[in-house]
Amino acid sequence: MSSPGSVAGSGSQHRRAEHLLARARAGNAEPIGQLLSLYRNYLLVLATTQFDRRLRRRLNPSDLVQEAMLAAHRDFEQFRGDSEGQFLAWLRQILIHCLHRAIETHMKAKMRDVRCEISIENVSAALDRSTARLSDLFVDKAPSPGAPMRQRENAVEFANQLAALKPHYRDVIIMRNLQGLSFDEIAERMDRNSGAVRMLWLRAVEKLRHSAEVRDE
Image (cartoon, rainbow, N blue to C red; front, side, top):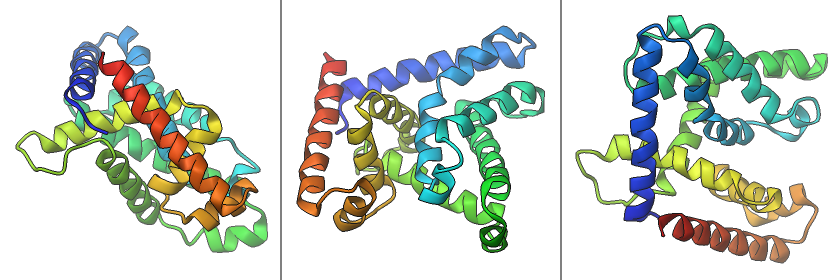
């Protein structure tokens, strides 16, 4: 799914992010909101991968992301990094804390006894795995000196393109490619048969590929 155009597009966002970050770190509060908006889709995809049915009945992933972004805006002075990669890591930590708090708040008491055993480290590890899968979907496998930065850029770019898909296309890609569910498991969640889910996933991948090609033109 990767292409020179998609890398170039993500590079443009990377430069804009670094510019906004430098202005915000210099004490200008105005760019903070613009900076955070660049990563809304990225955080939303990551949050969605961590929601099971029980939590989804009580909280929408977009509400969790909004909470995380408000916290990041409020606490921006606590950010000590100076690069986009460090900023993304900081945002993920905020998302992790918001997710952990949501689990503790919204799960029923009998479930909370089990859920409270989930540590920040375990949630962080799950989120890191989702981030790695997100990056792998949009990068070439051949290693290069700039690979880590390109992975971060392309993960954000992929999240933006994924967010532009219709919800059922977006959901099936998240469940199949990011959560690693089988077609049978996805079929149960989507209340469809396995064959229909497989066809839906193929159409979703094609839609995503077409979106990337159009963006490159």
